[in-house]
Each structure stands twice: as C-alpha cells, then as structure tokens.
Length: 185
Image (cartoon, rainbow, N blue to C red; front, side):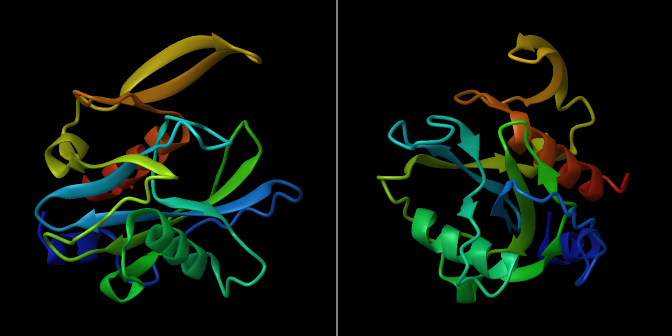
C-alpha cells in the first residue's frame, strides 16, 4: 500500500475511543506502517519481565514525563528499535485496548519512510520484522482460535507468519488495523 492510501485509511485526527479504566498500567505502542511493505513488529527479548518472547508492537509504559501517549509511543519506539521520532508521521490513535494482564494500551498509528533503517535494542528486542500488507489485506486472516487459560475458555485471533505466533493484544490491534485498511471500520 502506498502512503496516500494509508493516509486515507488513517486520516489525521481520526476518531478513537479513549477508555478511562483507572488503575491499569498505562502503555502506548507504535503501529509503524511502512508504505509498500507492511507493519513493523518485534519479538520481545526472553529477558523482559512481562510477555517475554511474544510478538508486539514497539512500545511500553507511559511515563509521567511523557507529554502524551503519542510521545510515549515514539520514545519507546526510539528506545526499542532505533526509530528517529522525526521520521515518524503520526496519523493518530486507534481505540484504546485493555488486556487481561492489566495493561491499558493506546495504539498510535504512524507512517515511517520506505526502507527505514531500524536497529533493535538487543536487551529488549530479540527480532524486528515486517508483517506484509498482503497478509493484512487478506480476508482469510486473522484466524479465530479458542483455548483454555486461567479464566476459562478464551477466544482470540492468530495471524499467519512462518516464524512467529502473532496472537493476543497484538493480534487484536492488527485486526483493527486490517479492518481500517480493508475499509470495514
């Protein structure tokens, strides 16, 4: 997808739901869309205290010194994958997402330049990879799954990738991105 089409799917200031959920841990993630390629994802280091080894967007805790969730997402992306904030064209935010593990996540959508040079911080990120737009635009994905967890039977989405399992909060936020790109939401 070209930058113009991405801007159409995510116009500046598009509406989002900002959930007020109290005592959950505030986090922000950067949904970094690279025109012509896809969305950038990370596989978290096994040394991370929360969600080790899982696929995620670059992001993390919103700190008291962050001017906004957008600033937090850009700061975290710079720390985790070396993205210069000046290279990110922030388009806006998607609906907030609350996880079963106690996080209140604000997804921030941004365009990054084609062939952007990123360098993962090895203490936080094991791997950095693209999920192609062809996968996001494919109506056969994501695939619904069910599994038993601590709270009983749980429904969740899984995105196909030859090397990674993309599920949970990341899969749901990717589903929301895909629906906007497909013109469904």
